[in-house]
Amino acid sequence: MSGPALIFDKSALQGLSADESMWLENFYTTNITPLFFVETLADLEKEVRSKRKPEDIVGDIAHKTPDMGCVNTHHRDLMAGELMMKGKIKMDGRPLLSGGRTVELGGKLGVLFQDAPEVEASKRWEKRQFLEIERTIAKGWREELSLMGQEDFTYFEKLFDAMGKPKTFKELKTQIDLMINEKTGETLFEFGMTLLGVMPETRARVIEIWKASGSKPIREYAPYFTFVFSIDLFFYVGTAGKLFNQFPHAQTHKVDIAYLYYLPFCKIFTSSDKLHITLAPIFMEPDQTFISGSDLKADFAKLDALYDLLPDEVKNRGSVVFAPCPPDDVSFLTTQMWDKYMAKEWRKIKDRMRKFDGTDKVNPELEQALFEKLKKFAKESKTVSPDKLPDSDEADSMMTRHMVSIQKGKWKKFPPEVINSNKRILE
View 1 (cartoon, rainbow, N blue to C red):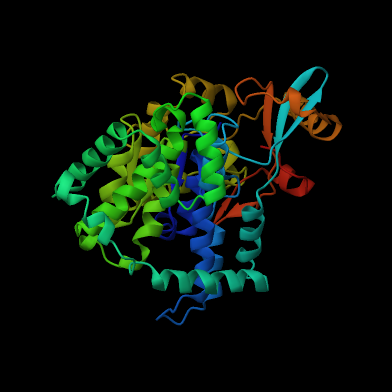
View 2: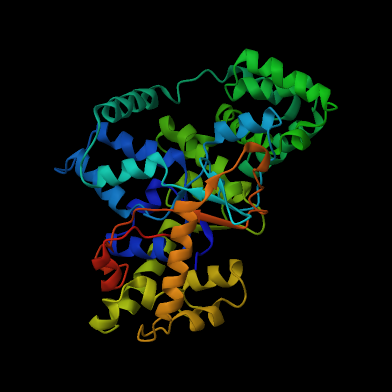
């Protein structure tokens, strides 16, 4: 079973041991932002005071990065499609993936996803293998970071004459929402696109399409664009008002707040960064949960200690067998998250799948039949024409194919027969 959709930042993952990171992958559907990979790669050029090599620091982070995590579509690509009316962006707490291949087999439509290029790169980083272009990107990113925090915020200071200077972040959020809701015309739309780096020729085309569709309020016409716009406007006005001075490392503030662009595509966000701890809850919906990195680490440490008590013969069956779902004990934070976001019957489903002690196996005939069905769908299905492309909710099936490691930290993921088969694991 896949768990609740969770987004983590680099600080949260760095705080986990390799053993603890196993439970992040095991109990959550991890939605990895493109920004995470850029941040991780940038550490290749980071000056470190310890004796550890930058390659080892990046490699360790890559090892803890979930193998079976999905990579969300870049926010710029999502905004571009939405602004040009190529499709609605679903902001319902589910990851939005790109690169899927729509196929048909026996009258059934499905979508096949492969590992994203970022995931494949991360697997190389784990082995301390880096392309020269990646080192160049890392150097460029470090140089760009050194220039951040030096922008001219004079224009945004002028806004205080009309709106007043906010004293708190919550007050600022209210002011930004009012500004976007009240000033819904072309001037604001143009300003928002300019602020987010949309090219002039593209802005002109978007305005044409927007007018042809009835010049709706931008929050209605492009809700995801409006969400990202509100975050950037919040940042620039808040910085002009000195509110961000309470956070260290001014040159990384813009990068840190960019993680919030992806909040609509998760149920849970976790971070150890002070800026995220303060600001993420302000932008999250009531049904979303923020978990501090320290609380997540403490919960995974408890889970790790619990499963460590199992007999070796059970642990050798792999986490997919002895821990398909978290414990029933609601003192575990992960269990609370499953109760909040998963189907209410998950405990019954868990008991039908495998018993906690790992001795009750899934029916091997049913397991093999499922595997053959997935393999047939992946190999024999035919790519369909664009006019048949289904909505994700309308597809008969969706399948993500991963190449995964057999072990994370001290923990085996799969039973010996699966490991020994040396087959591709299908999720």
